[in-house]
Image (tube, rainbow over all chains, first blue to last red):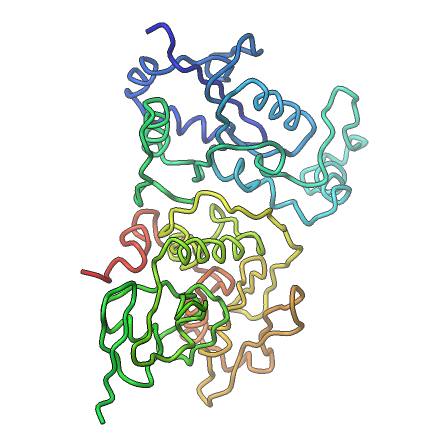
Length: 183
Length: 231
């Protein structure tokens, strides 16, 4: 099939659990690659967008400047953008730091935390190569326009399968009670 | 004079007893109206607004409105469904509801109603309010991040001598659940469990329980909220 929909995926401030759940569709992945073609994704290890993609799947929210850049790049290069999982939808576990001042977070993580090695001289990492951490974690749809949200931590593999197959075949998705979960 | 009256809910004619609320009448007639702050044997409080219905063109809470003869109630119309979804979504964004880390997940009524309406993401921006987790008793924690101010605990939890245990302090967005610590000695294991149980979300947590029921066996893993109605 010459013009299969092209899918790109990214993991922002996530744990890769949603990508794992995508792989949990098991042998149906063979059917999936008959239906779609994967482009830029941690699964294919393609690093850059060389062409316009049809579907972009985003795992994780935005916790630093690189996440925001990457998300905007996906919005620019994908016709349909999908938030996959709780972190992309509402910030998820990383968003538990929202409400704690960023300075306090960094000091706890790098200076005062119980696991900081007191033998070294602890510093808050400040290399200019490092992306700037944001004041709080932002859900993807508060940064760019998101077309669909697939909840779950991680989303049920059957839900991802149902969603992708109905999307590429142009059918209406019926959200099944058994597969729609927030945890 | 008969104390039975007739009204319609979504065009279906039902018979109710005079003095009943719309929620009670619907329940007796096997019609599901989602509720959250409503709890068995408690006087309705109308705090959550989830049971909002349209009566004769006006939106009212079904738990706090008595039935009347010839009343026309709109329950599952497109407009009322959207209104209810908006209320549920507001409850989500106004707190910090981290379902993946919550002990109540799977047994949570707020989550169950959101599943019922197949909500995938709220239309409102998340507020991420600054709330705390408080240990108030050797057996109980208050997780303020999750409290939806339904007042079920305030209304329903009493010590053996009939005294209240929970209350709210402050108003508007500063409102916060408090426990009367002078009653601490009156809270035994049974009352602590009742307090955790009466909370529709995970705001009152009984210590030492944690994630005791495996995923797949929790209340709303097995059944959808309101599923038993209409059968």
